[in-house]
Length: 313
Image (cartoon, rainbow, N blue to C red; front, top):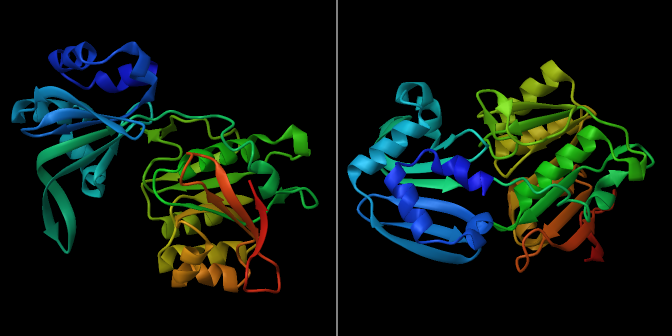
């Protein structure tokens, strides 16, 4: 309920009342998204279900909500607007669409037509069944790890919890706290609001937010001397080259990527190069059936290009 309330504070009072009138407290903790679309009804995403709230949104309501999330200073949020989302207090992320103004790159988005409030809920200990595969007890460090799944299967939630654990240390493995550098390009890991992480990412973690992953990795390695770097949804050539540079410099890494299975990873030329060059040591595939559950774990043998299936969970 607390997370929902922190999102609804950006809505006009009459819309909050309409939402409460058409829902029940039993579902509040399961609401994942609230979508506001111009000239269409409000919709709520609850797990895999969509609930339609019978209120047609008008332009005045869209503009009022948009001004609230920008704290009545749209100009100060211009950079985030150009990225297509704004992170608000509590770590919630508001995606937006409208008319893009382009001059080689996006300069602004005008005439906002849709707002998607993604409600952030940190799930601590979501990585408890995965940590044992990532920890290298001999070296008191982690294996270079890639977590894969299609969108919406819990990659970011699990990555965030792993970061928290390795940053704080893990008594069960006699694992001492590590300096972790997080490149939070889209603001979904730490969910920083005005520079302050809204999620618990551990006592030894430094964050670079709203910066391209490749650039952020280079900056953190130069300035903060991390022992571990972490970032979400890698895949481009610049990301992969930065990872190779970091890991060949002695930094360990944990990353996520969109892929259903190991075969899809190998079809991505850039990701496959991390396998072929023995950069990634473990690949963890999440289930597409149950959010946050592991389906397969692969141990990439040091001298082989072909991954060896280590375990089924």
